[in-house]
Length: 295
Image (cartoon, rainbow, N blue to C red):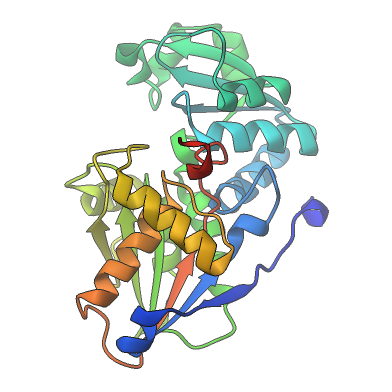
């Protein structure tokens, strides 16, 4: 199953005036290079869910997301490459023409079904089965929105196993918080995990604890939403462009751009002690959130 994936992913050292001024070492773990269409934390979260679907002899993967969900597109691509039928339950009404994300999912063979926002709230309950074709839904292997479950946590914990240098902090962008939760379960006593929330969220740490049953004192959350999910500012856009010019690594404005901006902001505020080694996980981001498409 894993022959098409490039693992383990490499570490790239990131140096600039800030890292030198504050005497910290920063490395970017390039999970964006795992696969061109199932990249980053999306494959990490899908891996053990797909293995479980096979054990249960399910031939269909069903999952949930918004109209711009990278989890939806990754699940659709995984189905195409690994031989599963896929169903995406999309929050909100259908609009034509489809955006790039949903068109890609459809081209991969995903069946798109739409729920209004009120019924979408039923996504984690048996009541969902009354809103659509119950036979179709009940026969599928169901993956939660964003891939957020204990099997996904297990997959994300493996990120740490691949890191072959000593480090003090490991950071990644957070939507549901599943990736950073998995990372936090696999740290040494002196190591800490920081999640950078990319949407307005005052209680993300509490939700991680409640939804994923992770109680971990090594985990903290920093907020860098830039107005909310998939929202941006001219300052963030310029940062991403400057980062690409300096390091030839593309960030997106939904996830990884906010992560790296936040890390550099914390460095500038002397958040990290001298001689600290920081790992930032490039989780792949949203493939159609390219700042160079913004005029």
